[in-house]
Length: 117
Image 1 (tube, rainbow, N blue to C red):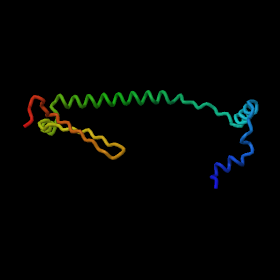
Image 2 (image 1 turned 30 degrees about the vertical axis):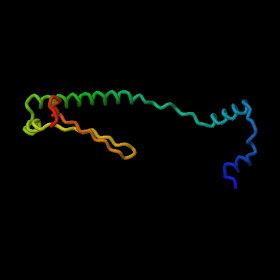
Image 3 (image 1 turned 45 degrees about the horizontal axis):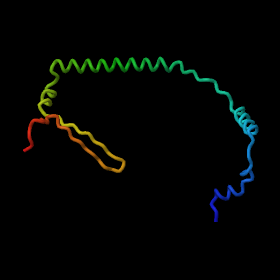
Image 4 (image 1 turned 90 degrees about the horizontal axis):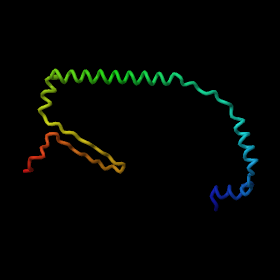
């Protein structure tokens, strides 16, 4: 029993016929002439919109940085002062497609001059 691809190839009447270059070009012209022409879309509004969004983002980032800097210069809040006494531990986590998880823990209070007990 043959599969459907083999059956189609065996019964194709034009399987061994060669298309001439002129026939191929005529076929291409016929297909392209059937496609309706499209008017180019005007995207003149896109560039000013992107520029305005970039400027707004820059202003918001500057305002946030200025606000954060002003909090740092005045001493911040009581919670920030209490939290600065505790060493900060950070983690970097990876998950592979196979399901393996890798977790690296970074201790900011690590002193390289100390020896391990």
